[in-house]
Length: 279
Image (cartoon, rainbow, N blue to C red):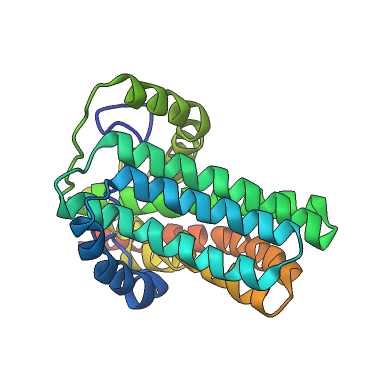
């Protein structure tokens, strides 16, 4: 479901294949092992990571085209190919020492393009454009919350990050500018909302213990399992079963889980605050 780590205006990119705070089961059990098997082949063929990003984008756009034509099974297969390649590019970059900000920006922005194309195709094939639009917005928000909650967890629990190399080239500057326009505002809004809710409970800056309780592992694990690999797997299953409209409703349902998760985080923060005062 992305920007310069030094920037105070937006969240840093989480390394593509670095362990996230929460485990996404579909990724860990299916796509990561398959990508790990594919990477040595890509290394021997001397295929650079950006080429794999472009290949997964082509596969995703091909899936959208097939879906728009009503070729649901072909679209389902291409969506899984896109997901496999999407998980292979980061592993390839790490294996060859080519992890860079440019690659991270490109990967994130390519995913957005593919997601938009897939939901346009879903609007066409289901005949429900407004539902497809709502579902696209829901997915975008769910992925953004997943990313930002994982990063906030890292901050609260002092989890080490490995910053990618900045190349400072023209392409990187263009990709960074696009990210700042497309993604940075929602990252700022999500983090500001999370911080404001916590400070309202505490009545000011939280202690480390309260912040740790508020940014808990269960929340990030649940959100991780609403991530893009899981989303595209669910889409592929719905397409294979010829029920694409069901996927649109599933995505709306994922969005409906966010308020419940936030209320749970706030309850944990209140409990931690009460324990600290009692102690």
